[in-house]
Image 1 (cartoon, rainbow, N blue to C red):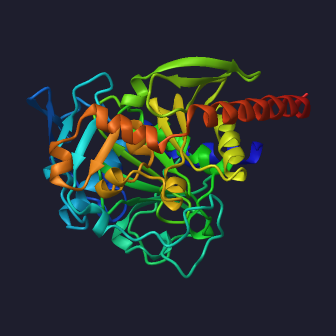
Image 2: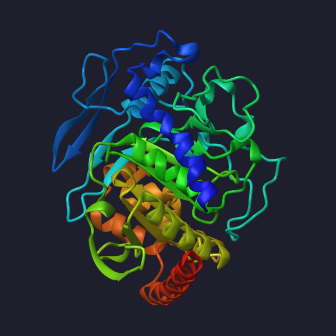
Image 3: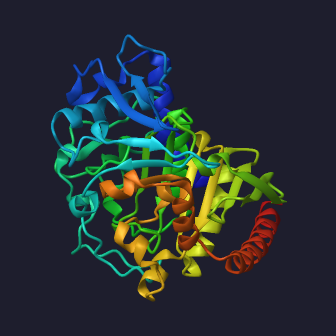
Length: 406
């Protein structure tokens, strides 16, 4: 694990190097003159009144105090938008906050499910081998690559712009999501040329945690969907986008379950329609990442689909087991929700629902959303049994790690 931590810290340290040197990230590589006055607005409606969710990202406007990483990401994403690379304009899609206890967010993107790349694997197995014959992220168009980063032993920036046809071996990449559900919706693909299947390991999760931290913005979250948890591509990737509202799951009440020897606290959600775990604390981000990755690995090996949300710039992580794909396969899913064609991936389980039909959007309400999320989640009995197994496994795992280190 020491080598992994060293690799990640060296790799992501380059973001800080730009800030210290005063180099403008958007002047690197082929996009050397990308100095756009970017305006982005999404109309939100709440309690019958509309209001704007706006962020002005012009270079002269530093009100957002963007980190060097996020500044570059926003500008490069806007460049891809200007080139017409997206299936739809997310800025023109209607979005509203539903009245109620949780304030779920609903976005209307009509026909999005018909424009996305189709799922090319079974939904009944969380761990499946990588299949080079199916679509994977090495096959994306070069212009979909925003930038890549890799290992360096220097404090100089090592972004690889210009997006050549072949991506450098062992580098990680950030790509646009061509079917975005939010502003700056991107895909993080660790070690993209290694063609890793969609499964969590400690190193890949640490990369995602560092990306969340380098964004330095609570409204830019990183999410993960397992196979069976509505990942649609079996090639290791995380998703991320910017939405300037607090997600319902982030506001949910929590109940502490235990504190591990390394200082990481594990809690459970209370009063939220999806049962799940909340992790925070620890002496370092690496400690927190290590614990969450171990639980993800445990769930994978038990064939339990799950979704993860890295929140608050890597300070909190929500882990949400689910069973909706299993219910679909067994014919136990409600036809009402099947007709709505909602896939409960991490963003939906966290409280941002993407609806594909105008009538569903117009009639969306908190009671209906809660019923859907409850159907996607584990039952109380199933979650209590899983919780016992997870806590038992973590107690043993942390104890073993302490013994090895002593």
